[in-house]
Image (tube, rainbow, N blue to C red; front, side, top):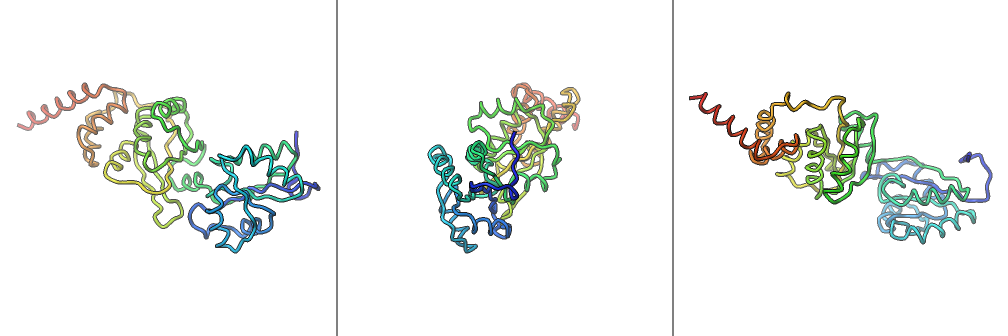
Length: 294
């Protein structure tokens, strides 16, 4: 058991401050964030060039030390030695909160194991910021960060989370968003999803719809910038295939701008059907409609 008194306790050790940084708009930098970065003895930065620009903007002259996933193993003992010698250190990531999708957690655990106080300086966080404006249920939610890159690994991951009722938050690279949505569709079915990009920047954008609608949209639109995907959790009852009008599902996709063959492929994937069977069924319905019209 460990009790940390962040500001009232007496210790010869320095403190490790986890300082948030803006995720796009520099006006989101708080006075406390600026003052902490000015007052510590050293700043452990994920990218010293990127952080250097931030420090220059706010007139912060504190020296930096490089700390990222590729040098964490060798730098953690160095940082611990500085902390145990009475130096205060601020850890920052390129954007948002440290320890989220960066090696900060390893440093935090090492500091706590050494009896060093770890103090968060709160600020912007992309996942929560996107979630509250997404229109999907903000609670309960689960943040997963970056997904596996390979399709098979992604589908295995989604399969393990398919029944979770919580809203799910993911980071994704813009050039992989469409493929990720297609993998998600194959496992989750056609759930509501929100694509968020360029948070707090001039081109901030929310694209809300179903997974199939976003896949169709991305066939005609190229993504740029940093992206998040927020997807609705599993409903208590999955739709009964017998109650689903598959032809209507295809027609809705076609009306949204998707090509007919692609729409059939998406619906077949969504409901676990053979594309050829659904293709034949769709064209039978088309022919029936034409004969009825005559």
